Image (cartoon, rainbow, N blue to C red):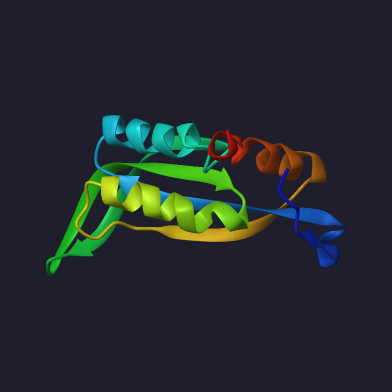
Length: 120
């Protein structure tokens, strides 16, 4: 199991990492979500339908999109990005990430699910 970063300022909660992107179709979202989890670079992924407002090529745009959010370890974020960005359908994909406090049990589950396939 990977080590868990403790955050004493948050009452002893552990840290987990997350990464998020958006795509223009549900099938692309499902494929990216599955790719990260199947590679054991994320413990889980959620897919949500959203409606986005944004500027593109000098025009104000609106579009239905699907947001994918993966839960992983801080150590696995670079590998998750290397796997997923080449598969992304957008020319300029949104790729956001960060760390957040989590309960020790949830952080342990994430750490325990990330990486075993790479060690097999």
